[in-house]
Length: 259
Image 1 (spheres, one colour):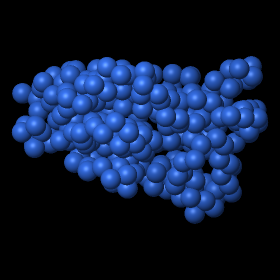
Image 2 (cartoon, one colour; image 1 turned 180 degrees about the horizontal axis):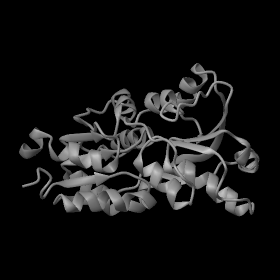
Image 3 (cartoon, helix red, strand yellow; image 1 turned 90 degrees about the vertical axis):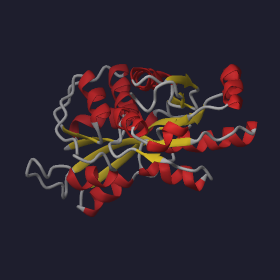
């Protein structure tokens, strides 16, 4: 039997991304509670992103660290009436980002075996026998994020243009008053799928004086690092940094049986 069977699991992803994780949890027998803690919104000023969209076809590589970055750039391509299949090479951090790019009709040329910033930044072009030194790379990203991928690419002498493609902003938990009350009664697991969700969950706990669940599960090391900085205990860090990998990691966490 699944270790998640019957467990109440808090899903903190943005609303448009929560359904897939909730479905995986239900399949494992869990009872997901949805409380989106961040919203994905456009940049305050679209000018830089629009310039990047108009120039996107002139780059050697497009590199994406999230599905949100893919959607943000392609939405602008469509809005501006620009071609949406580009004559460039593409690299993405993991399978969910790859699926987002493929849904837009753009082939994916590189996905690292490890879904980490270092593996992506140091691996772009290697499997294809291509050197990125002197190559122009466009990296759409979230506002105010630590984009280590750019650092690794620049270490390889790539010319990297970063552009803010979207913003993470706190969602309004007041709209989820019913869920807040359920959290007061306690849940078994909270899932944190980004640094932003970790920060906002910690703030929510402080604001409403909520109990911290027996299991705090993070999708990857950067999310876990931020959670610890914010004073949260971290019990599970997924080895495979995907929704599937997170559910598998929680499912096999032995102490879960005692919660």
